[in-house]
Amino acid sequence: MARYEVNDAAVAKARSMIAGRQYVLDSDWGDVQPGAEEGNAFLERHSWADYAAWHLGLTVGANDGTKARYAFVYGDFRRVHRSGLIACVYRAAEWRHKQVELAAHDLLQTLDRAAGIE
Image: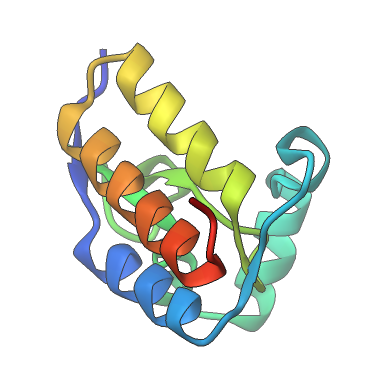
């Protein structure tokens, strides 16, 4: 099973976007989660560092500048999605990637506070 470490740059980006109210509270993650085509289109216009900042996990042992390096996407390359953070918490918990789970959970709590969700 792959191992992941927390991508601190992605956590910082998500926090900044939440503070700037660049988030979506209600979405169907299955419909808005970026797939391979969206990732490729994003990479045509942006750097690998920009792409990486949308992923809370870094695959241990994978090379930078490859899609295999980045996991646990939390937004649609424009905004943070609450459903994306929930998916990250769930997937990380399911596969026992505790540090990614905790980072995603903390971001979810930050977003909920910012949005006034109790």
